[in-house]
Length: 120
Image (cartoon, rainbow, N blue to C red; front, side, top):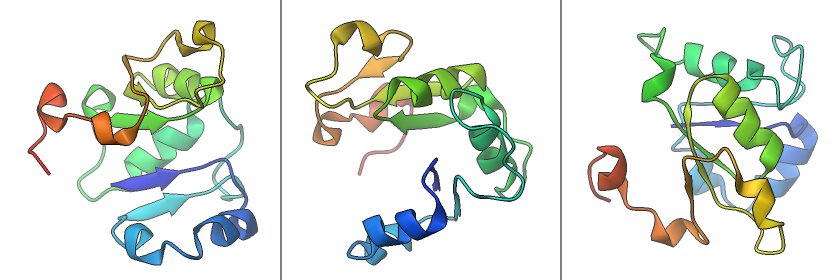
């Protein structure tokens, strides 16, 4: 698992400072100010960079599952030819859910088996 966020490093660190135990499980993090990143979402760049940083890459993009909360992120994942589960803000217009392979109201509803993944 990894994180690919458009947030700048200083903002990411601020947002995640109380969740170090979760983020320590990530293989790597790609942030919006990564020197390799040239274009932000909805460009696929951030997800392609994240995928190539895994050991044994290149990964088949169709085997990557992205979790997103924003329409631009969904578009970026689809532009990278990846599968995407959207967990949007409930106030987001339902028309903006288009493009996601699956839409959940909460991560608690995620069923790994639906994606051929092992259970929690």
